[in-house]
Length: 171
Image (tube, rainbow, N blue to C red):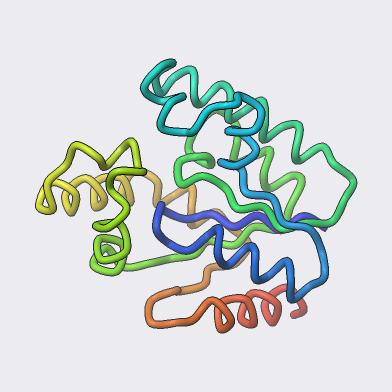
């Protein structure tokens, strides 16, 4: 079984997916890491050198390769992955999906210190970042809410999030 975690950047997808994979005794794949490995460049470099449209095409190719695996693993998706092409259909066809829902205030708190490594946020002030995140969440909400399960992440540890996902998967 493949379990895909989706949600906005800063929602804890990578950390939760890694912990969930450990708890289940299966593999863990971070889509952004897989993209970087395939291109031998960081996500920031891909965005700046090739632009967002080419990045999304690369993301789609790598996602398709990963989801065509017959292995069991937990996949941490990129924040925008479900919103482009037919990615959501592909993800739902090949995996169980979990939306890690996080409040805007929590996202801002988590992302403020990571702005330089986040191409979409690096040029924004704190006020602009709040508006940007709110707009993105509104635009992506329907994609995220199409997940099989939703887990609220605010004020929860990674261990608690993993345990909740395992509980939901076993129901």
